[in-house]
Amino acid sequence: MFDIAIIGAGISGCSSAYFLTQSGLSVALIDESGIAAGGSGAAGAFVSPKFVKSGPVKDVSEAAFTYAMQFYKEHFSDATKFSELLHLANSELSNDRVKYFKEHTTFTQANTNEECFNLLTPYAKEFEHITLKECALVDSHKVCQGLAKDATFFKLHVNSVRYENGLYDVEGIEAKKVILTTGAHKHLVNMPYFTPRAIFGHRINIKTSTHNPVNIHQFVSISKSIDDDIIAIGATHDVHYNLLESDVAYDYEAGRAELLQRAQKSIALKDIEVLEDHIGMRSASIDHLPLVGAVVDAKKTVEKLPEILRGKKYNADEYEYFNNLYTINGVGGYGFVLGPYLAQILCDHIVSNEVIDTRLLPSRFLRRYIKKEFL
Image 1 (cartoon, rainbow, N blue to C red):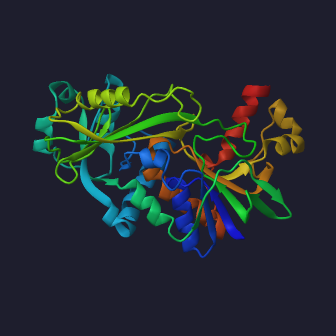
Image 2 (image 1 turned 90 degrees about the vertical axis):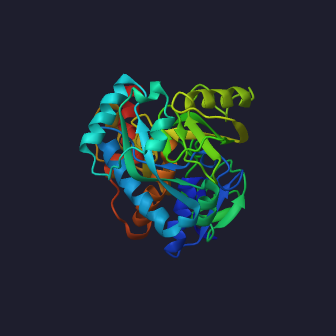
Image 3 (image 1 turned 120 degrees about the vertical axis):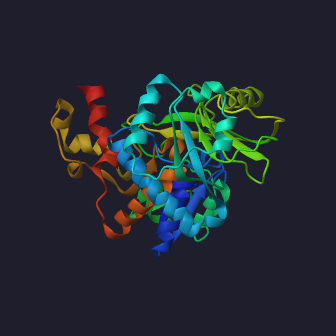
């Protein structure tokens, strides 16, 4: 018997386990493959803001970035490498965004590192760029293992969750509440209003004689040199390949070649030896904002509020919800930025009934779904 069962042991699930166990709750953390065995383990695990001009995506991204940087400093300094970040535009459109961000950001900027700038290709130098004083790269496995240390981990495939007599049964594990942090995997409850955009990610660690002094983001993410001669190169890319559904095996050789080709559009890398491959799926939402909060029961909501099918608007608190069922999803390639921030928000909601920003609630997609399907 647990207070809460969390299904999915990526950064969102492990972060949730951390805050909930810190609050004194007993937590079962469940994953069929292991802790950080999927998209989180494959992530480059860069901690940086999104370089957008304005709006809720900017607000959430920057709040999460600020929170994450402080969180990793306080709790996981041994698993975090802090660095300047050289962010370059990669198209004419993003030139405007980077220029605007550079002129308006409140984050501390630094002079462009001369050693790094000299590594850039002439092509890369054509684009707008900004250097932030401090960003980070975290050890994804070490961080997730540390976050989950006070939870009870079960390596288990979950086919369904069943609610009866005030308790959830998750493949024989009983819990009062359930949090779904399943990312791009299929939903375990009926959530027709949210179809995650499953995006494939690939990261390689390479050994190279090229010394890179700072993290670089342009066509791919390129880490500063680790242990003198190891660099991580990663990208959330190839929206057409779904590792979870495809019968075609992933072509590692082609994936490595693409990552290296894209990296070398930014900097010249010499004497390259690929050491490791990490692949996984990330889940994003259509409005580029993550989801955190209670899960709407669409069927019961329509039964209770039939006029919603004819366009009548209702407040989200009038909807019907699954009992004690929550989710964090749609973090895309920013899991290690958003994970701790969203998990703290959800923990505060569960433990202290703190209100969640309506822009982040899963319920925001229900009207959009009904409008598309029925109106």
